[in-house]
Image 1 (cartoon, rainbow, N blue to C red):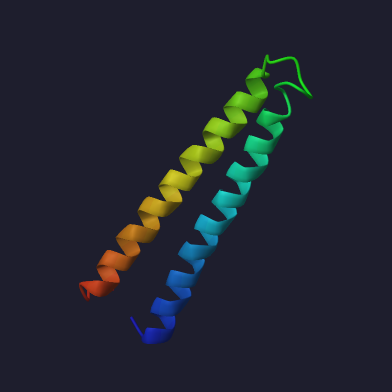
Image 2 (tube, one colour):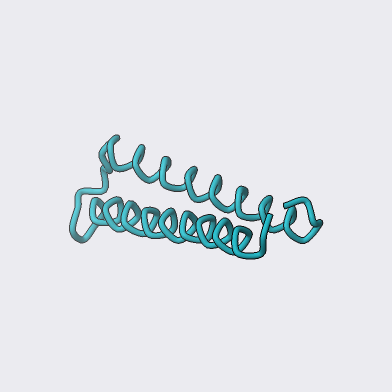
Length: 77
């Protein structure tokens, strides 16, 4: 792998982490709006599921980024 390819792969992995973080923020804001003072304190199943999925994607993106960095540092990519 060339240094340019490694940087491109690293950039893509970081972009995935950033996108996942933004989705968690958005899902959290949606969930938070369902609690007082704006909401009734009973979050919808959709909001809970969306938040859970966003958290899972963030965890997966972070793990993939960590694996990529470890491979790059070990010279395996």
